[in-house]
Length: 444
Image (tube, rainbow, N blue to C red; front, top):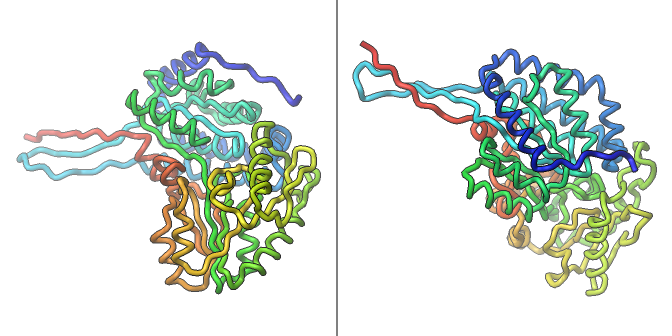
């Protein structure tokens, strides 16, 4: 056992929200330069303590060291971008039909934001779902995944050392199924931002609708990656490997469906399987290690059941399909059919299905044949084909000649259909986490 964390209660949630609400009374009037300074300082401290944060990510959630270092770099970029948000909260002057009336609109922070974060990228999401509301003058109550309490508390200490006033950022650890509803429905919580499963996200969406809360949801995915006949196969294979096997497939944007033109299908599958089978499965602190342990028994059982059900129904396991202790070897499947669970459901493990397609239209139709719509990718040298795919695929994000895993602080990040609601990003969060106020002044 690595650690023990407090199982927060309903009373703990209520106390944290009340604390955040009281802190909002003064923090809402804090100066942009002060919030900017705090967030810049937080980035400096994260840079200073990067090794400590990497160690936490390796030890607590089984991140290979390269993925842990990637999280730290993303956390730094989110903090620095948030510092810039403090000076982007602007209003408008508005023409008026009334003689002598000056009309304008201003933005104000909304209040307490509830941030519910996942286990797979706890630093990226912990930072992103807290620094943006803080940049705008809001306060935060964070409920982290029960698998990542150490990281959450370490982030709280980082903010405190950076000079964030007491009560602005609050962490309650515990089981979401026991205390999550209390957080999302608390009268002082004005907005909920959640990253996690579709089932829980739909439940939160219903609660927020009933109680009049703003929300953003970033949920599951079954992301497609298309390889056309004219694609650079080496580039496409590298992109496909990174898109599904990073953090042993426990990534919502993972490209678990790959559609390859029939004329290059056999070559792609052979080279893709060879690249997958060569991925490192060693010490998590070895930079050559890509595949680490699956987070829990429940997740391991899910991956096993998807692989075994596909095997029993006739799918071809080109490589992988077996385990080393709690690590699933990178698994490439062909011959997957709609009656197999892995065809439509998110495995959240290092498992990918590869399908032949004859035309771009087939790739678009297959990509859209899913309840998910988070990220998509296409590899082709034909800009017209690329743009046809971009304009017709049902996905919140599309990447041409790049993998499905990509994120930056200032982009509109999020999905369609069952993959989410709303968008994260600096501009989008300014819109979501502030409210307009119309002001008029009658001049003499």
